[in-house]
Length: 454
Image 1 (cartoon, rainbow, N blue to C red):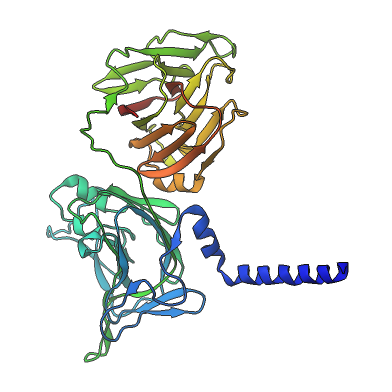
Image 2: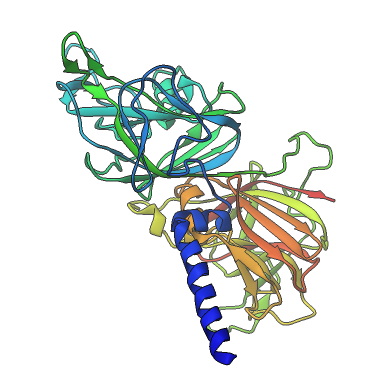
């Protein structure tokens, strides 16, 4: 009898393994981290195919292939706020050389000796993604010198900010034939694009619909009469296309329940600083200019490690604040900048913390781990999850403001960074306390600090 049970267990294990193997690993992960497949890797279910003959087809291995004939491919469903991830590559370039514009760092076109926009001949393949359904919401995929990600509709805007924002910060494209990874985050008018691990676009796209289909663009093609290819044809492939819809609750910015947390004179604020470099236990309770307010902005010198915190205890609330670091001269790799700060939620003093840091739930302001949860002390009962990979794709470069939204309800807490959910606390001992802002060695700027109590 034991032998039969062993055989049955073995067969059952094999069957379960075969079922698991029948589902692609990428799909198994999708439903764990909140992403769902937008392209199933088998057919064009969920997509609206162009009318008539076209070359959109699915290849073995879950690759969506296109050879510039037929038209755009659009999702059946419309989306508003989301994170879209996908791999793409150009199979090859076709046709003669294509004359591409060259851009200045501010997004304007470089002019030649005649005062005309300068163009350079390139071998080009061309496509794009419409992030809100309309061609005016196009994110370019191409071989131009400026790189992929450019927002074509805004390159000639009368607003210099939009012109500059439409130009990729860096050309992060891999060579033709190699795969690229792109992530596009849409939140309201904000668009944030990461290409091959580098932020290329971080701006806004005003005037676009609030929602729309996601469209993979047709471009170029083969001319039967001339028997020539257009020099900017969409010889494209896509794979691993998946999406996470964002459900951040909204509240009108003029809502009467929002109140400023910080006053010009720092009324209602208390302080706790490390006494000196050698004394880890001693504390000071005087501000002495570490925190000040100027032109509505909270400034911190960072010279003394410690915390400015509210005299009032808060329980259930939504806190919003924007944090920026001063950009050091000569900084080349902003992603490795070690600037640090943070927000301390549910601060209490009746139990031990860590030296001069009070017992609390820290919402990290550390550049590399923005919006990550860090319990103080580490054995604080605080079950949490933080998406570290997502942090790197949504945080903004040094010198720019990153927006935090901390929502506390009982012993649950959520943290959004630039509109994207990064961390959650799902229980534990912390339910209320003071709210603090950290001073940790570098100058910081905070603005638009406001709170809504529930």
